[in-house]
Length: 502
Image (cartoon, rainbow, N blue to C red; front, side, top):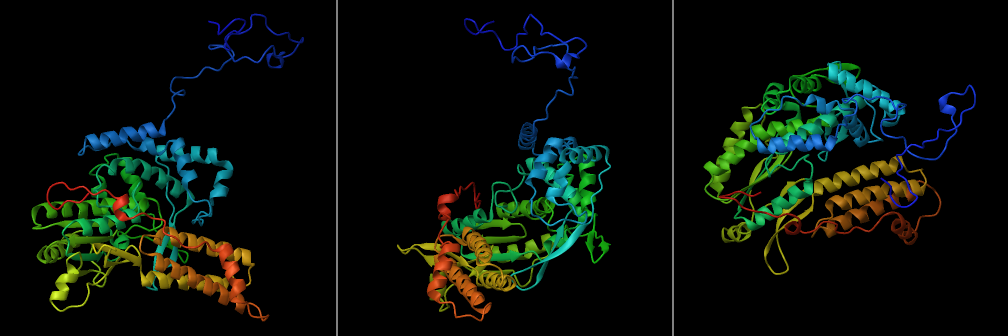
């Protein structure tokens, strides 16, 4: 078939063959014209039907999601081949942080990528035949807001790749099971979604009491036996279950010694947040949903972000009963509420007036995800949940900035300015919620003062005037601003039945 007068199909082979020099191989033949090779050309290599199959990563995940949603009780028996596909491993490698610290293998993102395809093929082969062995994670510590140290683990790069690939496959299953009030470490959900859920739930529902709770040392007290049982509710592929067990028993390398435990998951790996959500889904979320439907006499609002959760109640009796029974429920799975971080307070749109009638002070506040939640009012006098930066979080961040500036005291101003710009931008992007402008402005001002003090101390020259310092701060540190909408603009709350907030 021709595509117009004088124009032939691109796939048509010229009838006259090119001239060849005597003794030359066909590859050295004279080129006639730039046309594509005809289909079925004898020179083309023969390919088997299996080798011509292309694994579509997205299509495979869509099939798993569809099955998980359509069959809630189904168990998946063949999942491992989705994990060890080279395409998925390559995607997981590209998703890893390029400047992350190296694990016990010493491999960085750049060094591993020097011979990427060969490494991924070898990793895929070891996963397929069961020869993959995870390495112990390297122990590291970060500072917490209360001054203590939070232990973290730095997995080897290959372990990061396999864990990311596994999380992508398992998320396609468990996202169909997880409850709507679970927000931590889930695709499409963030800490601000959880904050909006708390604000809207307390505002639109009849909430007068808040139970602010935290599970003590959650990641360190997860029981492996229970976790494996929970995984097997949905995953019947023995190879995937063995892979998860290998990560749980890989151990931690600290001071040259490897320690292994039958409790806990190491924070820092890609698989740990998913395993934590699976554990709390069966140990906490399902029980909360049943308790709310069977025992609650009034409205109940639940918002959970990892091991930190907030529960709002209409009646105090419901709140007190829930606190007792949830503690018993968690103890059955090796967990316990943090005694110092779990408290019941009067909070809501009726709390201020009720406390005033009893001759009490204004309602108490509670902290959740770095924000202090207070009972406030709009300009029209309506109730609203006021969210401001937690004083503890603010002090901890300023202290960290002070220490870092002291370490960079004699570095160029441009280097210091780039560091402070990243600090201010990151702080604003998280804490820039409506009605928190004063706190983020205070942080910006305090950081500028710390920088001014550092520049004055690093030299014995004339004192740096604040007028000149203002120009330096204006150049390097962007002004703080509100970058998040109001909670009711981003979150749509619907109700189904009694005391259900989704």
